[in-house]
Length: 422
Image (tube, rainbow, N blue to C red; front, side, top):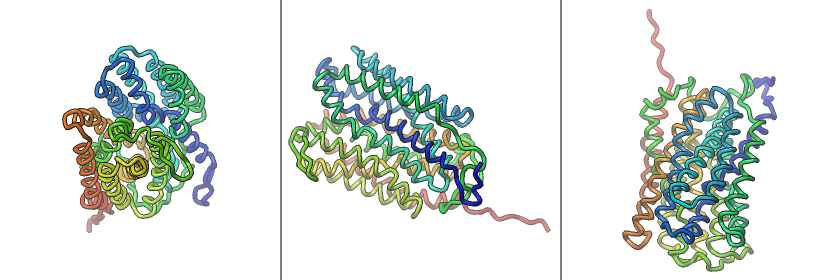
């Protein structure tokens, strides 16, 4: 066993981090590849965008709201069995998507996929938080980057296979491959043993571990939760609706040439967005390790508000659509490294998987707003109100980070005076 006092930490923790990242890559398409299937499904069955996007909301809800339950098993029995089951469910879900000929069947598949993806996601994030208390923001960011950028390399293959073989065959092939890889890697995952992680860190952290019950009765948890919902909603709308937005703006198939690459605007945007949505997570996670979580949140959330407003104002230009959608995803994806990190800073690592999972359910709450975006567009005939609301929510979250969350956290972690009886 390594002696952390001499600074010699086990190389095995980096292997655990790599395994977690690969598992996250394998589940990324369940969320970030979904937008490519909406139009083909609608063309075949004519169910309507809003009805089909209910499946996306169900996926997000089950992916997030059950993570605390899955985290409870991880904190007690280790990560291996939970990720193993998650891999099986991920494969089953996309096989079912390939077969779905009714909306209820599609919704059931979405629920199964959400449970499987949540099991993998929550476990891998929790493992990173436990293995890297000294680099928590960076480790959580790298792990979350696998989920954010994991679909970047498969955007074009999925589009091409949908065009050549149909969306059903695409669901089937990618579902089986992704599920099998997660299942295989699960056998190598494990939690750290005592003495395998460093005790020192530059970020102020709790000196004790809070149980999930203690955490949810703390006001600071609900401030974090509200901020997560505010920022998460805008990004999830963009994730699920990017293809419809591009089509409505009339830029989806317009060729764009940037950085020596020429692609249709939507394809270009999806590829860049996935990369930037992944890069931002370790980048802002690392920044937060240096300048503090709340300061980093203020910068990122304010940038997101500006990006969303600019996309609404200038996104009708194909080039600007690609650039600004990239900015939106770059300023959004960091929530998946910053919030788990600050949660564990406040409430300790012992129940990190469960506690971070409880906070992660805010993504599910935010996902409820995705179909509302489609309804607002149907009612108003444009995306202006959706963009305006999303930008405003991000601006509010940026203000809350500095004005409310930071003073509350500093007060919570401040040393308590010791009363000495004379």
